[in-house]
Image (tube, rainbow, N blue to C red):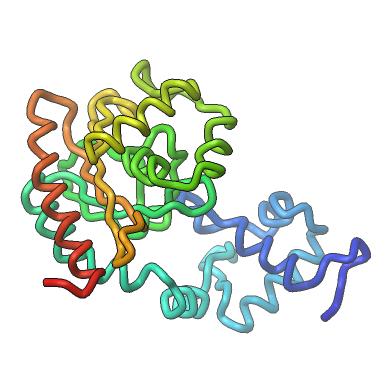
Length: 250
C-alpha cells in the first residue's frame, strides 16, 4: 500500500481523517481536517475524495465533509456492542418511562466512557452525554461503575491523569476517586450528585455477562434533589434484567 515519506501508510492517514470527527463535530471543512490530522491540505483533499468515492465520507450542501452512510453501515454491522444494546433496550425504555429524564448505557473504551445508547425527553434535566459520545470517567456515574470493576492497571492509569473540575462537587484527586470506586464495589452503584452540572444527579449500576464480568453500566440522569435516590432500586432491578438476558436466563 502507498506510504507517505514519513513511512505512514495511506490507511493510517485515512484512519486519522475519520478520527478527526467527534460526536459534537460531525461536519468539518477540508482545511480543518488537514489541521487536525497534520496532513498537507492537498493530501487530505485527495484522501477525502477517495473515501467519499467509497461512501465512507460524504459531502454536505456547502461542500463540508461528513461521515458517510457506508461507514455507519459497516460500523453498525460489526459492532460488538449490538447484542448488549439489544439486551438492554427493553429495560432502558422502562427506566426512561419511570424516571422521565435520561436513561443511558455506557461501556469503557480505553480510558473513557463511550455511550452506546441514550433515551431522553424534551424537558429532561441537563445531560452532557450523547450516543457515540464520550466522557472522562471521573465525572460520569457510568465511569465510576466501569472503573470500579476494571483491571488494576486501568484504574492506576486513570488515577494518574488530570481530573478537571466541572462543579464544586466534582472529584478531582486520585484519593477521592479511589474511595469512590471502593464505595461502588461495596454498595453496588454510583451516586454522583452535581458532579457534571449542579442541577443533575447521575446514578449508575453495573451490567454483568454470563461470566459475571462487568461489561457495561446502566445509568439515569435525574434532577439533583431529595427524590434522586428513588431511582436506585429501579436501576438495580433493570440491571439484573439485562444481566439475565445476556446470560441466557429469563
